[in-house]
Structure formats: C-alpha cells, structure tokens
Amino acid sequence: MVTRVGAAECADERPAWLGALAQDMQRLDHRSTAERVAGLLRRSITEGEMPPRTHLSEEQLIAVFQVSRNTLREAFRLLTHEGLLTRWLHRGVYVRELTEADLVDLYRLRRIIECSIVRDLDDPGDDLLRPLLDDVKASQESIERGDWVSVGTANMSFHAHLVALAGSPRTNEVIETLLAQLRLAFHTAASPQRLHEPYVARNRALLDLITEGEYEQAAGQLEVYLQDSRAELVNAIRGQRIHANGSPGAAQMRTLHSR
Figure 1: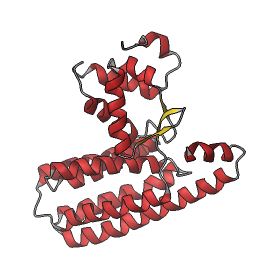
Figure 2: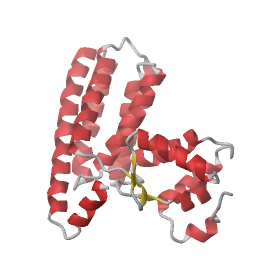
Figure 3: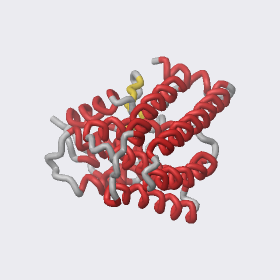
C-alpha cells in the first residue's frame, strides 16, 4: 500500500520549491511517468531553486506529485545516475554537491560540445537565433531588477539554445544534464553578481559573432569564455572547501559525505 500525506499536512513546513513543483504537477497528466517527475526536479535544480545538500523528502514529494513511492524512487534513481542526487546512508536523498574534479570534467565536455557546434554552424537563421537573443534580453532585465538567480537561469537557457542550434535531440539531452550539474556549482560562488554579470555581455558578443557568420572566431571566444568560467568556479569550490574545513561542523559533514 502507498502511504500518502495530504498537501495541507506538510504545506506549513515545505520549502518554496516544493510549492512550485506542485503547481507544475497540476499541469501534467496524473499518469506521468518517473521520467516526467525527474524532469520537474531537474528543472528546479537548473533554475537554482534546489541548492546542494537540499533534502528531498519522499513523503512531501509523494504528496506533491501524487505518485507512488516506487515511481518517485525511480525518478530519484534517474537523477542519481545523472549525477544530480545522492543518497546518504540512513539520512535519505539529497541534491549532490560537485567536487573540483566533477567541475573540471564537466567543462571539458562542455568545451567539446559547445565549441564544436559553434564552429560547424552554417547560417542557422533568425528563427533559431531568436531564443538566444531573448535569453540575453532576459538577463539584462534580471540585472535591472537585481535578480541574480534569474540571470544565472537565463545564462543556462542561452547555452541550451546554443547547443540546440545543432538540431540534435541527443545532444540536447546531454547538455540538459550538464547544465543542471553546472547550476549546482553556481551555489559555491560568494557573489552571484560577480559570477554572472560579466557573462551577459559576453553572451551578447558571442551571439553577435554568430549572427555575422564569424563562426570560427565565435568558437575561439567561447573557448576562452569557458576557461574563465571554469577557473572562477574552481576557485569558488576551493574557497568553500577551505572555509568548510575550518568550520565547527566540518568533521560531521565530512562524515556524511564519506558514507
């Protein structure tokens, strides 16, 4: 028998991202599969709503999604395989925290995918480029509001649309997972503004080169762009590790990650 918890029973305690998931779930067919549940959770991670170490309560999510425990656990399994979730023994499922090695490997794959796509472009046309322009505009509007989380989300969307120029559904699936993992690294930055603001102008410059047909130059700029972004996030992870090792709860957290 599947035990369900009424939404009202956990509404007072659940975080905001659970409420957003509940609204999204209302738009889906109640026969939705584990893949759809995983997709909603993945999107919440990509949009920065679920930072590393966020605990995913089975009871709360069963109430929100109105699915069986087995379906939810299958969604957890899919996202764990994608490197987005981790299970801590006797403690449950949590959003994963990236290591420096994870980040370096992630950027290695991003460089291979994104730069090769830009280098091989052949007049994609205004219709395909318009979503990238919309992402740049969304970034600029978010800056005016001082909403740096949304700036980061627009940046994720820009790179997803950049990869979509290749017209490859399989590559789109790969970059979706990579960008969700990348969003986990964003949470290590001490200043979201410092992390995101410079790349709005760089996204616009990259789009201008692509629009002008300067694909080789755009690919070269993108390589430097990704190198700079990787270096900044690696430094953020190192700084966070140094801070954590010196904090009172460091020993306990190291124990949790070793389980």
